Length: 333
Ligand code: NAD
Ligand code: UFG
Image (cartoon, rainbow, N blue to C red; front, side, top):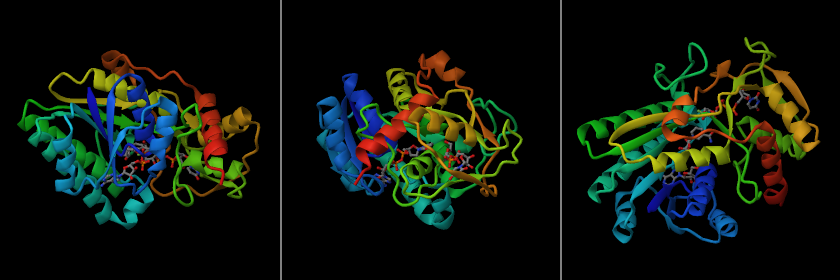
């Protein structure tokens, strides 16, 4: 089976590519490299022994996207490509709406033209907005608080309408909670440009001495220690969730799954776990809440377990150790 992985040189796409190759899938990657590097292909080759075929294409451009399908018989697509920084999306909303939505529409148009109607889409827990309670099940009300989140919700709707209009489509929407960590090899991982927005990459840079200290955004939330609680999931477990989803991609219609662990950890839990797992200090200071943050975000992942037979296996220590291992091995200049 040949799978086209869009955004496959990115953080989650590269980990999923590794797992796909190791399970015997043939993988083709398309990416415009706006947030990743072609060198990731060499790392994938080092881990798996196979360098996937690569197309440097912007998915908002239809003709180059068509060419990928003309040149290959593609059975299914996992669509990771997109811009993902919440803060940046508030500053550049049009860029986010255009890139994420146009690419998702062009991709589906081209897939339909070539009769490839099996699609897995990277959605996010951000589509639950500020949930009334936790854990969150897939039938919770949907809302968004920033343009990035709105693109995810709009794309979910576009793909749902598509499946309604044409019963041949088989679409799985995967709502990720907070992916962190890296491949056990330390060869691929998360490598954001500039100062990181997300917690784990920031902690890694503080531990490495590149940033002075972590700002903990608020300690007055109604959580066990007052800091924000999230459902952190090891990126390898998340990648394996895609394997489970692709293996079940044979029922028409739209299928929606939360991919999380069901366990919540606070910011300070993460700091302590990182310090303990890696025997390194992470200096921090408590600062004001970050606008738009919610107190707690926690998945009920039981639907994915029931229907896909998927469950996370890796714990917080694995997440912290692998993130630091990647930084040590691959981020040193
Ligand atoms: P990433 O930025 O590492 O990977 C996305 C890739 O898409 C990048 O390599 C980028 O170059 C590529 N890309 C962007 N626009 C493109 C376009 N128009 N054409 C071709 N390639 C394009 O991000 P990631 O963390 O691996 O996230 C993958 C997907 O998962 C994204 O859709 C993201 O919104 C979603 N997601 C991520 C998280 C998270 O915390 N990382 C959480 C929930 C959902
Ligand atoms: N945090 C800090 N200091 C930092 C960074 C984060 O205290 O420097 C705190 C936040 O306040 C929050 C927690 O750490 O309580 C996690 O923050 P992240 O920025 O790592 O993650 P978010 O839960 O805010 O959002 C992430 C992605 C979203 C995605 C969401 C759910 O950025 O795109 O997970 O998948 F939608």
